[in-house]
Image (cartoon, rainbow, N blue to C red):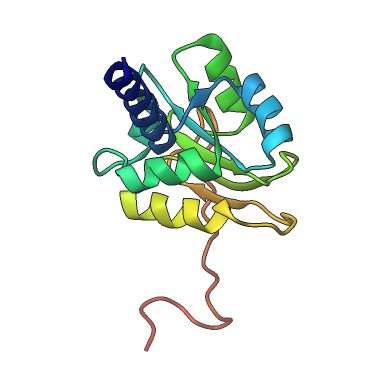
Length: 169
């Protein structure tokens, strides 16, 4: 009897430990409610398909340490652009087919907005930067690597000094 209870207790603790290592993916509305309670920043991954959140990383799968960071420090959302609701939400976030949005702890401002992909290292650094940010967000860090549908990528023109021409000596 005691050995059976020990096995049940051990398996429950193993499954609980396993759950804390992986993010829980929520719908956007559910995540907003959870964020209001937990006061954690929201990490919104935009992709397509069943495991599309992983496609935001362009050089392989998301590392276990990053999954643990997401599970512990963020309220995680996956927006599937293959669904009409997901496509509409991605457009509201001004994200192309893949991207990442990170909110502040209050859920009132965007701290980070990526349209496109990033490397595993860039993801880890970005998440680490915004995981414990307690300050008010005054501006959104915006990274555009893929333009949202129908919107061009703005690239500022370099201005030459007056009187200077390319090719002049």
